[in-house]
Length: 145
Image (cartoon, rainbow, N blue to C red; front, side):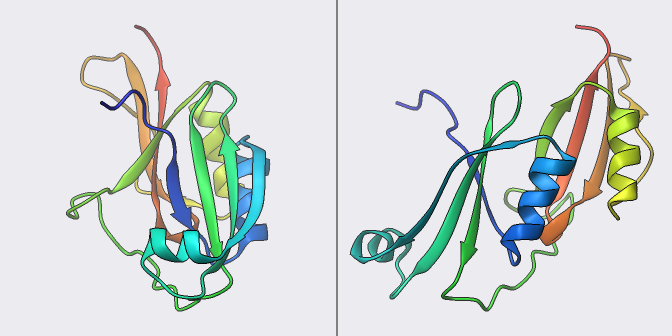
């Protein structure tokens, strides 16, 4: 029986840049970072001779993202999915001040599909952008419960 979603994993091409984006720009904190290799990780991933660094990051009020940087198997195709692609398409995060965050992200080179939009019921502001590694990010500011 599932009790919770533990984390969302994101393979990155440049760990330092990804840590900067997720920690310095978005405000996550590294709670654990380790190099992984050996029979266990090979078996788990169905690959041979895996060598990777994992960085587990937490958001200020909960939720975890795991960045995976493969030192081996470095032929990373960048994900180029769309909001309507089959499969997982985006990571949604609740934010306190969407306008300030969007300005900070634009300064960091991120482009948005549109400025924050009010939901039809007026309870949230929401926007989408494409972050590093091509991942789609959704930011939601709750205006009223």
